[in-house]
Length: 148
Image (cartoon, rainbow, N blue to C red; front, side, top):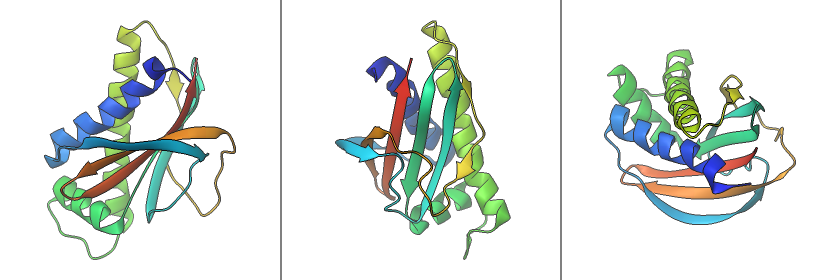
């Protein structure tokens, strides 16, 4: 896995958080994982299915999810209903769009699959990388495996 393939996803997520929720993140610890390890309440992911291969996912707590939903909808949630899930999926969709644009500017073409909420079972078995982003509202665990 090359940083040139992973960095657009990481920087795009950070930029989208800043734009939609006015949240600044700092890069923290990195590590190795297997697939998408779900230590947090919510994990959203998508696959790179053409051009690049692999996946990108981000996990966070319920408190972080509620904060993001409130920023996106203007309503403070008490549970993550269908509208809340849609709001968070939109953040991931914006991340995908920004990442595809950045990759394209580097001459890398790819197609990304639909955003999904991780169910209880990890769909990926490959060794992957994780990068924790910290912020005033909580942490975001980015997990990815991208190959060209």
